[in-house]
Image (cartoon, rainbow, N blue to C red; front, side):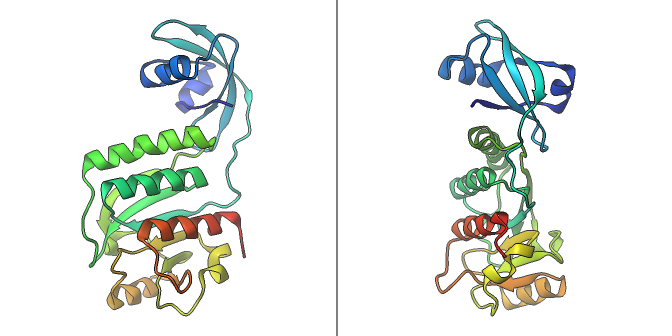
Length: 228
């Protein structure tokens, strides 16, 4: 099955034009031809079937047809993560998108070692598009520029991963609406107290201390599975 991210307005019009990188991928690398089916997603949870109607060297036209399955997890979970090095951040975006992440909000805390440049965010959005099309999801997660931890919209329903927490993550995963993952050095005691004051629950993943991106993916996979 071939998947393609398209604008919602294009789906409503009944036909979409494919050019540039998408055209090269579909009609040169994947060798699609007239009559082949493509599943279109709008990045906001809707999907439609389409059929290749016309193909030229630089442009193709797809005819939009009936409703297609969305292939999204039953639960909606967001992720707040301390800013990472660009290559590690891109890996986290790729895997989180494949799992069905709703949104990714980067933040900068007391022990965060770096921020993220605009070009790194643009790359992450390209990575997310590719991951969505590869995995067959229908929701493209929003990826926002880093903000100070104090400004991040973390509150009730959030679970902050903290090795010193008394509660295991498995005990609260089923109710997590957002997962909060700190920097490699962990949250400071002041930040833990502030998160608790804002309604966030702290929980641990086990005896091992995982890297930020690894911990995020592990927790996200469990939370999206609906495990109580």
